[in-house]
Amino acid sequence: MSTATETISVHAGPRDAALRPSFGPRVRRLHARIGAAHHQAEGMAFSRALLEGQVEPLQLAGLLRALQPGYAVLEQDGPELGSALGARDLPWGDLSRKAALQHDLAMLDGLEATPASAAAAQWVSHLRTLAQQAPHRLMAHVYVRYGGDLSGGQQLGGQANAILERHGLPNLGFWAFERPTAELKVELHEAFEQLELSEAEEAELLEESVLAFQATQRLLAELAELC
Image 1 (cartoon, one colour):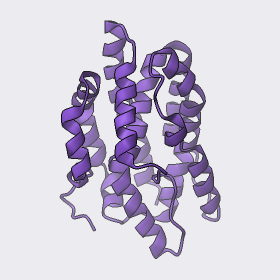
Image 2 (image 1 turned 90 degrees about the horizontal axis):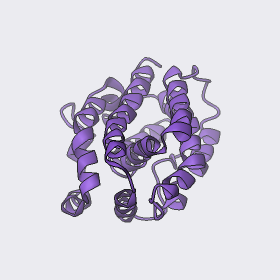
Image 3 (image 1 turned 180 degrees about the vertical axis):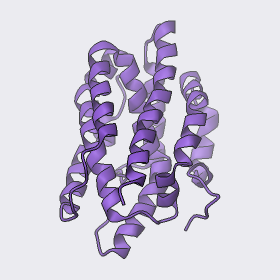
Image 4 (image 1 turned 60 degrees about the horizontal axis):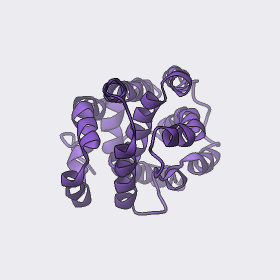
């Protein structure tokens, strides 16, 4: 179990560290821009409680219920929009969380209903606007969500499953990928280096990456109040 002073970043494995020197220039810029927002998200009450194994199954259900519609937008619009921007090798089939979310939510259906998430509704509305008006900004949410699932999400998933096991519930599939996460991260990074963006679009991609973390922070704040 994590101590109160540890964060997701502390749990980054050797493979994560080994990848950093090979980051391309765009991925380096993304990491530099989102660093502060990442640590802020880690320090929020729900994140800390999950790392310490102290959240309730209902909160995990609330998290997945809130994430599902956003991932639906990313996986419906992202492949075509990303390809049009040059990221033709992004491994959407291996990254897709649609089936895992459907499975997990069906498994957790016996838990009581959670309130509609205002944070999720705001996020989904924003994603739909970006898909129509600023696809390069939508790609920032792709990077933050799937990059997070492949990295710190692996530690969060382990803690989530331990919590569910203590309550006699099956493990989640949301954070489980069929291929090694190290391979998928390399492919994600390489695809983002393929993006063909103007100087202004590049700046907006970086700006939007912080907004993507802020969307997550709003959801985490809701979840902390759920129980």
